[in-house]
Length: 121
Image (tube, rainbow, N blue to C red; front, side, top):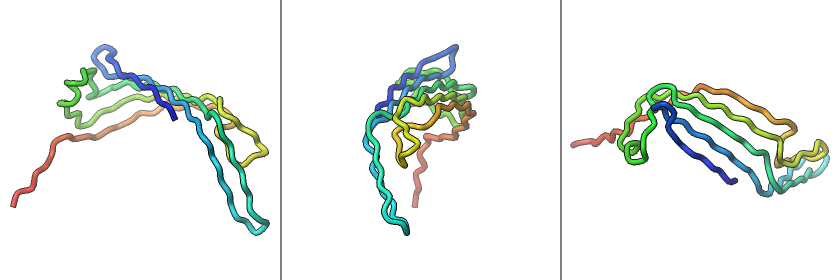
């Protein structure tokens, strides 16, 4: 899998884009009462593109500022689309791709605290 991602600032909010290209070899077998079922596929998988935008508590910061930032609760909007670029054959059991593309829109909540707790005796 190869992933490209880029984070940037839009009007003071953190935003980002990403692209993922899946590739590889998928072998598999299943034992059944009728015998073993074996299948494999290899090559390119489906391509996925995404965009994320920080709605709340996700300011656009430099790398140095982000290391020091404690977001607490952050809310972001995530849009993803997958294109059916991988191989798909309905006569096969395993596939590097899917039969159709799909997309989704998500509202993500993230609760993070970077404060470290030290225990004393």
